[in-house]
Length: 584
Ligand code: DGT
Ligand code: CA
Ligand code: ZN
Image 1 (tube, helix red, strand yellow):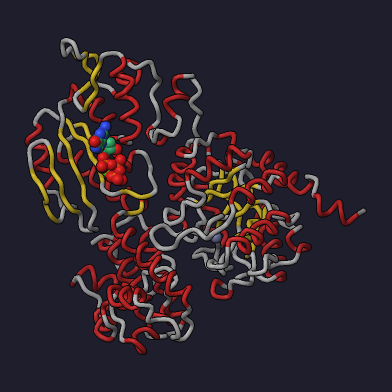
Image 2 (image 1 turned 90 degrees about the vertical axis):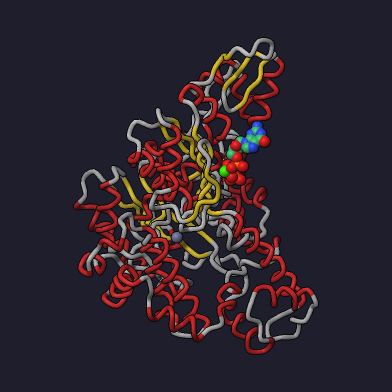
């Protein structure tokens, strides 16, 4: 049993309850449980009821369901709900923009039970006129269906990386002296992966392949040879293992890490020197003499290049920069001094302030910004002005007891549909950091969304725009916004953009992060932690930053506490054209 499987069941129970129109609070309890279970590092099947109920959001009832699944492989409530609701309806919920209400209505009025049926009706334009469905909605549904189909082909890095690391660990245990490494898109920290590529070398190659297909984490063998095997994991992810000679491990690692475009450039460079490059090494064409292959660095240095970090290997200018000695120094996980986006039980987080602070301290952080939701998010129990003031007092008191750690007073203030912020300026002015973000009206036109973001950027107290495009990888497209315009305005006002490290978001994306840096905007990398285990998401955000050519100096939460507070305060002192106009 993997925690991912339990999380999936809880998530689907929430969907099914939603399709049945049950209480939002019950639904939310299952959603939160799914999120928390997924974030747990320990295998839940090994835990007893005591330990299970210690997990935030897991009471006796849910603990019982986890125990039942561990023992019998099923959860009664889940099976009952599936009997009550047609199977295809669940998949319809995966379509962006189709919520449970619409799904239910489509089923009631047109007997739609599957994505295929829905697609056919939308293509024939037979949906318009149904409650809440216009021509535009029909188009959006078709677009959404496309996206679901695309999403099925790739997995999020957040899904793939833990699976890949577990496989590496099992392989290493089965052959302690063997050499194993991840390659492909997962080594480059791409936000989604088609498959997991693993490279292996050892004294007895045939044994490596044999041991691999027998691993407990392998569900189905697709192809089995002595040098190449393909398998499926229980999560449905394909894993390709390639076994190579130790003497060509470096060349193979370079070759199978890719990207293809990066490799093609290197091959051209080699060919200009009369060399040939492949997974076995770098060879002289004339006599086949091998020039390099054991270490990856050798391949690069033979071509007159420094070693290039895998995150940059996308043929996005990295080879040219390497040739000129201008590769950027990249952000590292160890550079991060604190997290600037965190939720407690005051809104929809799972922990009390003290527990969250303890977890942040345990990671060696120097600070943590508490940024609960604002009142507009009723379902998340968002804070109104009075509760913000109350929380400020609580945090001031907590800070007085802390010596080597600082809790930053913050808020994740909702940017309303009309662009106004959800809390008044007076209360915002009392906070150390104001993180602003959009949580509704994702399908407004480009101009409206852009204007909402711009008005948030122009608010004198906003410090950071969080998850600036609102995307959920494989589930929801980024909303349409003119990010360049937002970035330009943010640069003028010294406002930071967030790289949200939650692997479902990774928002800004690598490409946008690089754009932001070029425009001169400071970045923050934050996890948006709701349960302490989410603090581990930081490495995904760092991965995105690295792919965006971001260095330590570009990221505010690499600063020490005093320097950070100074920067945040200075954002408020920068000249604000709108204020100046007023005072004239
Ligand atoms: P993915 O799997 O779509 O997320 O992305 P990758 O980059 O992992 O692609 P994959 O798994 O098809 O191949 C792994 C690496 O192997 C790829 O990054 C570069 C290398 N490779 C694969 N096919 C070719 C090829 O035809 N030419 C060259 N030069 N390299 C290749
Ligand atoms: Ca791959
Ligand atoms: Zn948040």
